[in-house]
Length: 155
Image (cartoon, rainbow, N blue to C red):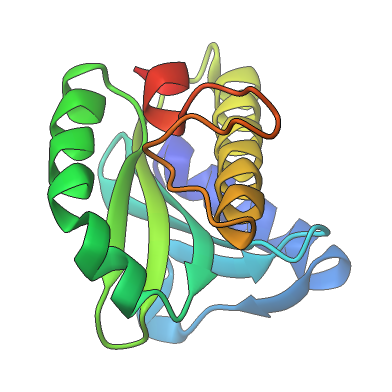
């Protein structure tokens, strides 16, 4: 069992008793899906020997919004990928917008690196979600809070 697989197995044992809506099937032994304490849906999936894909749901029911910002979304992802930052992903079948990020496993720095990556992504999703509730695109500055856009903050 690789270090990353061991991490997922230990995390699964912890989450089974502590997190809400934890799921995993026999065919997904390298993946965990759960809802954190803020109600944010999170997925962790081993996609290569030393690479973990983290997905954090931003919101659901966004088809109209996505169609309006699809070009901005594509341009944002190009910049975010070049900067090795989380990218946006839209799942058309259930109309959910996600942040996705690949994290490389290194046994020496894993705990801190994983925790900070996941915490940052959940925070980013929360900021975007709140902005969208107020009608602010993730790609525009928010005059109300005078925050920079997500894209300006993260790239």
